Image 1: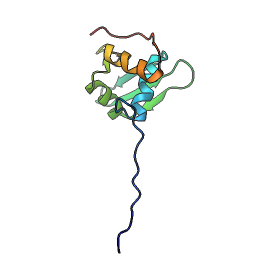
Image 2 (image 1 turned 120 degrees about the horizontal axis):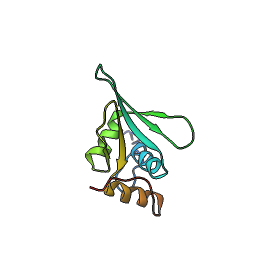
Image 3 (image 1 turned 120 degrees about the vertical axis):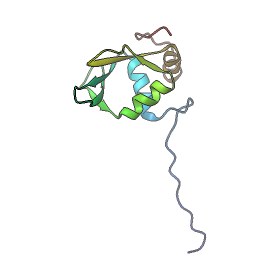
Image 4 (image 1 turned 90 degrees about the horizontal axis):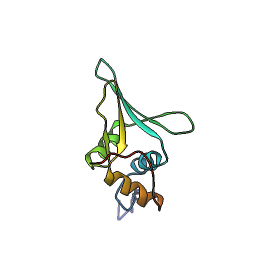
Length: 109
């Protein structure tokens, strides 16, 4: 078998160590999009991002959970659809991703 080199695949990460999907959600919220988790009576939760233009996109729940865990987004805790906003930390992260100020609706926390 010998010394065989195995290629290593590195996923691109942002300076804040966000995945490309997480960074895209923050940039989308900064651009005025809406992030919602739709809860169903049977317990299912579906995460959807609604950009200002174009169709909605379903997101993996893990992406939203990681952003929540890092304190970058928070919800209004409504049923059946919780709307997520950037926290102050999320707003700062979005500003560093976009290279300038952003003016989305953000939560004061």
